[in-house]
Length: 333
Image (spheres, rainbow, N blue to C red):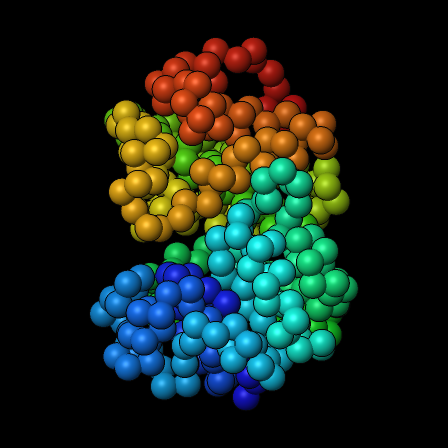
């Protein structure tokens, strides 16, 4: 049994806490809201984010970060990506010096264009051997219901990867190992933006030909940027790339696809955001990914167009017309 702190009591943080508990670990969740933590402790249920799902007894919750992090061997980070820097700055003094950070976040920081592992390294002073990531087709509600799923656990240190595999290998959750942190992180962040584009196509009333085209060209776009930054192209063909992309673009459980559908139906970003507490990471990440692509010299037409819709410069219909009218070229280019 390992002691694991999970920082973030939203849907994904709660679902992964179930995985960790089912794998035999002692889990303490940190939650921003006292009422959510109280429901977890008293009702064995996250009534706000995953109602109706009973939580294992080995999961506890607290609003006190020092209490959550005390003695933790692994610190799982499941907060919105754009809040990581601020939160981790507040928590850094409470993290045990040898604890391994595990990022569940799928975003790129606005302004710096840094991946989440880079933010962790910068704020916490942790080396690459203390930073892991988990990425794959992992819709929170399905994971929480213990439906069979697989994912990729990546860290630059192979011994740490082996430890992480043991920590999160449960009867319903199968992790695979990797040392390609860059590929896993970019696959996870970029697919959210592609899912926004797919959602817009659905919201406009288009069918499977359109959505399959967006998914496939989106994968090519993800691979271009990731490989330019040193990722293994095969990572993008696996669970952290294609697998995550397909799940996020295909499922009505996906926040990003649902957000995109509403954009396609004519709602504005502000109107959609004000109607839900759930965070659609792609809405923020499209600008930072576009920034990262520009710094890397990589063409990113889908992200560019999705960002224009999110920021109100184009409608979803205008986006489709603009993408279709681009100059023709060989597919491999």
